[in-house]
Amino acid sequence: MADFEKIYENRHDYMKAWKEKNPDWKVLGYICSYMPEEILYAANVLPIRMFGAHEPQNVTEPHILGMFCPFCRDVLAQGLLGRYDYCDAIGITHTCKHVNQAYESMVTHKGFTHFFVPTPNKMQAKQALPYYSGILGLFKKQIEEWVGREITDDDLKRGIEIVDTNRRLMREVYETRKAEDPPISGRDSMLMVCASEMYDKVEVNKIIEDVLKNELPGRKAKDDPGIRLMILGSENDDVKFVNMVEEVGASLVIDDHCTGSRYFWNTTEPADDLLTSIADRYLKRPPCPIKDMPNRSRIPHLLGLAREWDVAGVIMIQQKFCDPHELDKVALMDAFEEAGFPTLYLELDVTVPLGPFRIRVEAFLETLGSEDLF
Image (cartoon, rainbow, N blue to C red; front, side, top):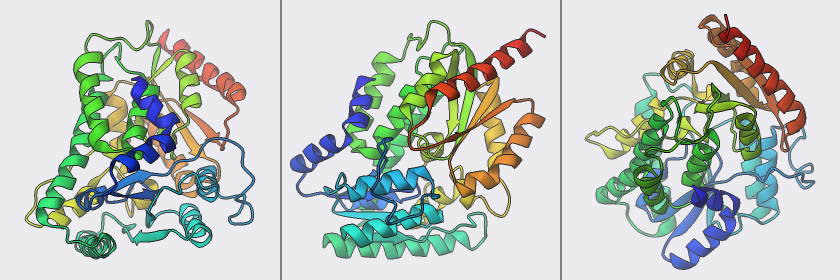
């Protein structure tokens, strides 16, 4: 497990060393998890997700509003401070306005080569698949022009296999968390997903395979797993927060984050046209609320996860000022409560005040424990 934490904590050092070892590859940093990584791997371009540092900063105020979400401000700060200067380009899919603005500001002030993929918002629409397949075709041509070579069908198949292998392995890891005594904590699971997003999947896949074969069988993450919880909401890679929740008597056994199950949940189904196959996979993945239109397909999916992983309650976290999750909050909380899953809502910032949050989490767990007595 230590390898994933090392990658997470030393992501920039790992990537600089990786670039030296792989001079024929380019690196593209992206912010939103809808980036079609298969096409990039097919072109010998390593896609890495750009994360914040969870530390105070004072460089973004001249560029984006202070009332924009802390995640986008933190990521922009890392870009402006030069932490991602090893990237040959950055890219984004059509996502929320806050993240879009962070991307635009980074392009303007750092001069990155950049790519925009206009992912449809109404992913349930009949026109979404032909539209998005065409968009991916245009994106493929742009990448071909950038790298100076054609991306063949064999290249695409290789890219799909690299990314789908990671998805299948992560599903295997998450399946183990259904156990009464889960062999892996929520913290370590999150680090595993983040490492998959921020480093070379070929190398990360080998580490995950080794963990599944040699570490998880017969292992117990905690002597007393405590109360089983689900965690969901905005982007969340706050290791200290997740660790705190598990230290006070809970096990986070399932999640719905773009740094968790939402990122890897489904694989690519075979189709005659590979770009259509890739497009279909992204349209059918568990959606971010900004893509969940016109119907809220998230609700039955999330309730299914809560039941299948046998949770006693749900922690809903939201990055402060996150509009998509703010608008989703009431409907989700009502659905969970009606289904018999008590919920705790918490609002995160760049740095999280663990003391006050610890008190609220402990009170929530105490309430859940009291309910089990009757």
